[in-house]
Length: 408
Image (cartoon, rainbow, N blue to C red; front, side, top):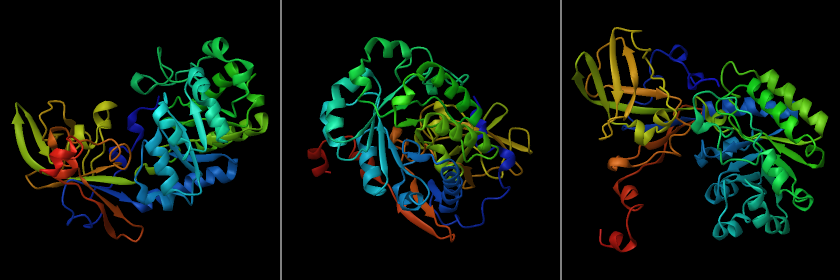
């Protein structure tokens, strides 16, 4: 696997915060740039045009729907992980395809899901048998997720759907045991998703495994969905190798091909602006406590883990003054990383984290009662527009009863 550092490295960042345009924004705040969305959209559209594939936005990585009208000019639709995301895609990107995959659907939600989804992918033969007839009667395109049992990742099992004991996807053994000709006949396509921030060579490896295990099934299908994890818009990604593979698959198997990247849609298209609250010492180490939290505002930093880039900073030792950056919560592990700066950090200094449009606003939380950062848009003309602010009631209303709210 290409490590998380395939996201922007320190050496790729500008030495200065981009202009003075953010100086009047209260911290903490997310800023998402239309220019970055446009840049990525153009790359993805070119792949669509040159290969005939379709590309979907995986909303689990980026679901800031104010940008959906802009994105709709470049991509084919949205991918959802459940009812709410499917509804969001249908409502905010009308006229585009809505695909959904969920590890398991509940009976209470499935009927409503049929209102929004065009393609429904099941995780197991048992789910196909439970809901397949309803989906077919509703004229939905039906797929089954497969597990090609081909792991191309190292060291991050939490993100590897092909790791031993994975609950995601149907192995060939389970297929042989549970898929009858009747249920195979229900399928319009197969879905696999095995990558995480990886290059096209890992997709090639995965596809060879899919062909090896499921080539006898492919001729009866209409489409193949190659899932997400494709870092298509990253600098250095091997686009030509991707295009070559997609054209090969299309010609050989006569299948419609779907890709559903999430990060590639908004990679390097956003920031998280923060302020230094205090500087504390522990032995020889200097620690800057910020008004933003890894645990609450950028949880992927801890879950992956990885160290996000900071503008005007380098890796430890690259400049004269080195600090560990952390959040204000009670969690001892609420640490963002160690960085070096050309000048000493002081209270009220502002720092800008890069690549904060993905897996941030859609994963953040209010642990410790931490306020959520406001969300701003910087349009392609450079104008700043406030999209959403959060306050105390956003924290309170998700935790208590209606009666309690009426008396607040």
